[in-house]
Image 1: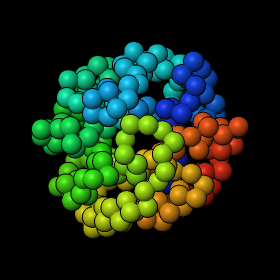
Image 2: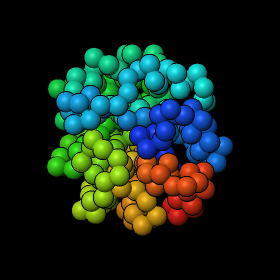
Image 3: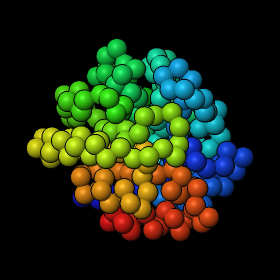
Image 4: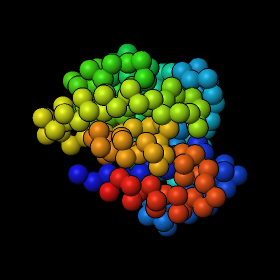
Length: 218
């Protein structure tokens, strides 16, 4: 079971976003996460499709776009058109989670479903056969640099078991507070995709920080 670190651009320099993303791609990163926040679903505002489109023109890296927004179906079209490779929406923001997954896949984009810390992992079980990514937030979404919530590891173990039992081709992703101490814990619990923001882009040498984290989960 391959595990990989996904650097989060939320902690990169937005003035030099393409430079920072290409730097970690050269270091071996296969994907980068773009956090989209609307100031309503979470108390912060980040970027829109135009930023994804601009980055797509400057990089070949897999763009993992995490939509922390209300009414995600309204925006999956623009973000898909902008060049997203994966669109992850929140279960809490969807009236019909399965319909949202199908709408994303109709656009030729991989589909992910995320849950906040207060949401039970059970809600994702009926969706696993249709998902490319199941995302467990290990912090309350909205801001980078938060402390990892170890009680979320039980959710990771639970979904790992369900994915394995069903033999589903679904990545199990964790996002929030991933660093040198917590990455091995999340990996051991069954996560295959670990999103790390400040632990990579907040380091003096982001490329080396990425390499060091990747070694810890291999």
